[in-house]
Image 1 (cartoon, one colour):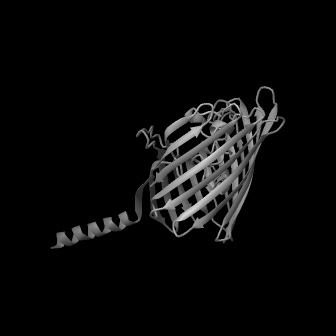
Image 2 (cartoon, helix red, strand yellow):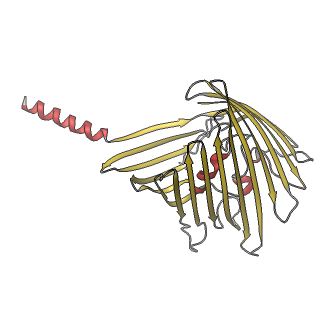
Image 3 (cartoon, rainbow, N blue to C red):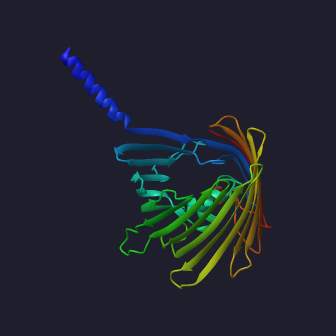
Length: 336
């Protein structure tokens, strides 16, 4: 009997310890049938029309006195062909969280991107999303490697995030990242401000430094939600010190339709300074929720380049605008 009581006590103690920590498996699968018409047109299955397909593990342990240890490992998946390098490049962080906020180490979305990208009503996914943060089109990288981050708690709706990404190269400035994002959320009003500095060796533009500042906001009137942002990126050639700027502004609107639907529309304007190159993009979409986790969606987007502009709705898929700089894209998909 005594041994049985000791065994039961051990099991109870083990259960209490296990209750203080947890690991969650989570994911999103999103695929659509899409067609993009231009000089080179493409059709077929396209991933990430309303959300990015992913698989992740999230763990947390209660250390007591309000302190928690946390980790996230998250990788991208491609439902159309079942492919996945699964290298956890979407996020791989470990950190501590408490009343002071959160400190984490590893690779993750930057605070600047998180502060302002939320004002794209298409969630920076699919044919309708803005190209303002597209790495292929702008060279901007919304994640950084080797990063130490601090995320503050909210004070009267205000919050701030600070990031520093070590270059870990022989020349300290190579591949280095620095950025800050500030947010304000109070009822229907939301505001965000961000600044980034990405040194050479990052992303699609290894011979240039990028400096970006961005500002956005939204207001929810219940019957309709308005959103807008402005983003300006300065490119500096390392060898010549010459510079140029890409200026983007966006206006978006979303409105509930019945109990399960949301209609959304946005307009993007892209302009390269010291050049006549520019582009305009108009997008219209509808999302119908079948449950809290599952939704059907449809999106149409129109892109018009002017004066030699070369932007594309899906550059990485091989589609290119026609001789007049135009592209049309449509997709119908399912997110779960």
